Image 1 (cartoon, one colour):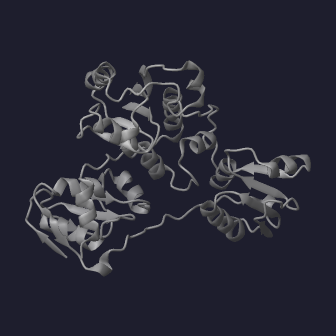
Image 2: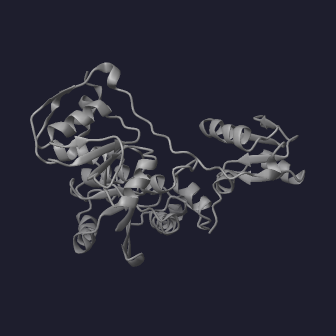
Length: 366
């Protein structure tokens, strides 16, 4: 694979490309590391996010440098949130639109679906990687390499290539499919996981392509099509060596033969399926009956943590106050310095970063 990271000044492509970092990986080893950039002000580089570098979006020499590496190795590109990097690289002509790309976030989610966050910083903390992240492209690529070595993702699914406008029409249309195909003739297909595509329509498409759709994975299954959080069917498919692909890959595969522009489904069918995987939470006996402060966590994570603490660890009390010192434990976000944490340490109250709590409840060990 070719690990990649770019630095830009904003989310829109018009902001330009300021750094491109590449690491070519063969058999788990780094065979080439390249940082493509042009220093403009060396005193600002430490700020990260492309600061101190010139805009190289339209620099043909830098572009050729990148493409020479891509063409020489011709390995799939892997990035953390690859759709963002790909958007810029395709827009400025650094990368061909049909070049094979994979998202490390998605691969790590499939391997370990029970983490509270999949940001590179959080993953580095969870997997005990002592490498500070400053949004400098080459440093971030090195961190991603170490995360992948620790996470050991086994399922890599390609980024979809279907035009976003087509997907929007497909999802929002109101089951009728025009055309026929033999692409899956006689194959047994199973769909699983949460999906933006109505399953009733996915099954109709599969039937139009000659497939037999079943509800469970067996030795006769030819293809498992996965959405997010695919659950036990994914494990079974891996065990049996069944081919595994994404919803987007499936739509892309049939789009040549079927007319998806005119497809329609009933409004009530547009509900994402969600097969939740059972979490095996490791008990923390020493926390039972204790009080825990979770004020220093994002609200969306607070809800998940509170549920685990109350229902499965059986703590006595949850405190969400930013001045809540009268507790036994404080769980806090990994990033940032907090007055509450400093005060708690002075009072000898146990403080636990969220990534460490995540390790504890999942029983993660090196």
